[in-house]
Amino acid sequence: MNVFNFFDTHCHIHEPSFPLPADEVVERAATAGVTKLMCVGTSTSDSKDAINFANKSDTIWASVGVHPSAAKELRNKATYKLFASLVKNKKVKAIGECGLDYFYNHTSKEDQEYALRKQFELAAKYNLPMIFHVREAFEDFWKIYDDYPKITGVIHSFTATKKDLNEASKRDLYIGLNGIMTFTKNGDQIEAAREVPLSRLVLETDAPFLTPNPLRGKINEPKNVVLVGDFLSQLRGEHLEQLAIQTTKNAERLFKV
Figure: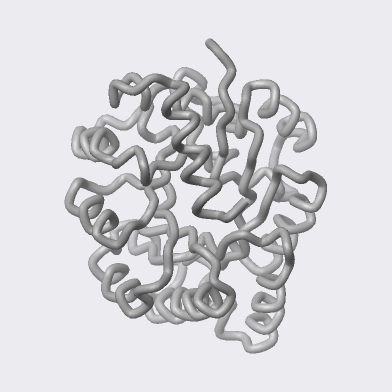
């Protein structure tokens, strides 16, 4: 396989619990052609770790976010103040991972909406895109999103149907696809993946999670975004080089890097 330049727009290799040597993982990614990485925060403390990790390289950036499962922490005024201060760091290029998750019941819907709105407000204040986590909650998500019409962003790990893809397209949002596409048995998800406009598609791994075929059972890492790209190029009938060039341009445009 030829080596092209890819951007892994969503990974968690900065976390202390990441089970592989992170520096080696970054080297393997570069060798495979994955030359740009976005380390995504999921809590205040995790966002600090993402920033610290991104500071090691000119081609790694960070997002700061509070995941729906940690939404309650933003009710604490001191924690929110600390979280908001992180947004000012020059390595921060997005707000998120944030959103709504009704599949799990780790936090109430009220806390999730509160945390999401607080992060929308920060994104608007600092003119940053957002990285959205939405699971079985699109109806409520669109209602909240439409209160902030100037915000752009990406729906991370998109696994919904063409209906929600159309709703995302109306709002000019980007769509993040990952290894799920290589092993899902859901035909609606596959059909939606075919229909994502190339101009709005970005690639991700969500490493260390969601390892794509044929590496299921192994720890996921950014180099595997190439496997996601290869699968999608065949699924969509696009040359891998074309897919790599355009999805990287999309990510650079989204995150202003």
